[in-house]
Image (cartoon, rainbow, N blue to C red):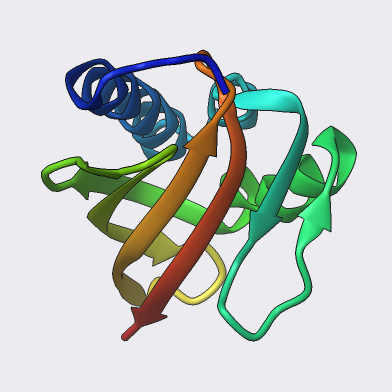
Length: 127
């Protein structure tokens, strides 16, 4: 991790989270993946096994354009602790197959290499 002060990491976190959210909202997996470093680690929940590498992480998000529509993503304030940043998020979408609305809310914790996300952990619930 490069040396960054809290303000720089907060701004980087905001940029990365906003770009990730823009990709999710538009169901553009390539945009979502653009925020990740070449060998990212992604953990969907505290109890799931971490996914490692671009292919595994891309595979997780690949169903977004197939199963979600009318997607809205928002994220809150960015908090910085050491090399990590965190934020709360909300994502609502309609399931393509059933038309049911889903309201997912949670927190995301990310570590960066100074430019991209090297590790992302999501803790969330959906209704």
